[in-house]
Amino acid sequence: MHLFDLKDRVILITGAAGLIGREYVNALASAGASVVVADIDPEKAASVAGEANGKTLPVCLDVTQPESVQAMVGKAVDTYGRIDGLVNNAALDPKCDPQHADKHQLTFENFPLMLWQQALDVNITGMFLCAQAVAPQMKKQGNGVIVNISSIYGLVGPDQRLYEKDEPGAALFYKPVTYTVTKSAVLGLTKYLAAYFARQPIRVNTLTLGGVYNDHEEDFLKRYTWRAPIGRMAQPNEYCGALIFLLSEASSYMTGSNLVVDGGWTAW
Image (cartoon, rainbow, N blue to C red; front, side):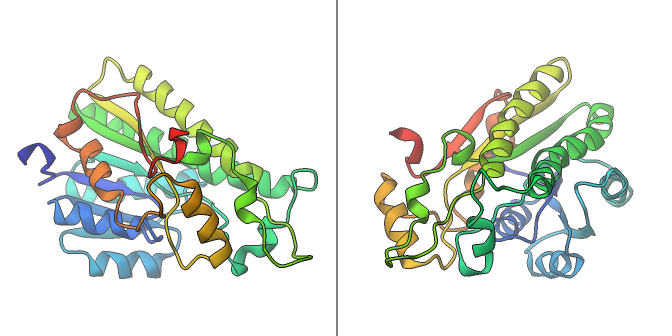
């Protein structure tokens, strides 16, 4: 089990106060890591950091702003003296629930340029900026690991039938074009960085996730579980083992790879 030990490792997680991010924080802290809990909402970041079982450092972070990213890295180095891992988790992902209904009623034909640019800024430029910021410290140390979080919709197009309603005359919902485009771009960024750092001891991999249950409406849940070979959506904590694997010495010979944990969604 020493292969999975993260003791004394310093790991940055962006979007750390989200549904899955907070599970990452708890898992990595429990595995012995010192976790930088970075999120655009400072109160939520502090709350998640306080609930974790281990060493944590809450940081307010806007991944679209270079100054904010550099400040996060500087605070981590000032506090812990090193950065061993970066988890690029922050992303815009309009959920299939009533709260985000307005985002899902936008067709491709009428999708606003503003929302397109916003998703590019957060979902892919944010990863670029964070990786760029941690690289000098990792090179100075002589090691480091970057894990970029993607989605099944970065591998295949959204099955738009999942978002239909059973009620006659109900509004049509769509998974936005931005999510597939940005999450597929994550795979390209990973491959580029893995090749770029080939002569440096910095490994870069993608972790691709399936859908996570979060009080979804019955129509959506029924269609999703029918579509997934494993017959259900993931629980928020079910990706933590894969993340620990990618950040630890257990994956020491992996770089430029994509680890898919999706309940079999992309198997057919």
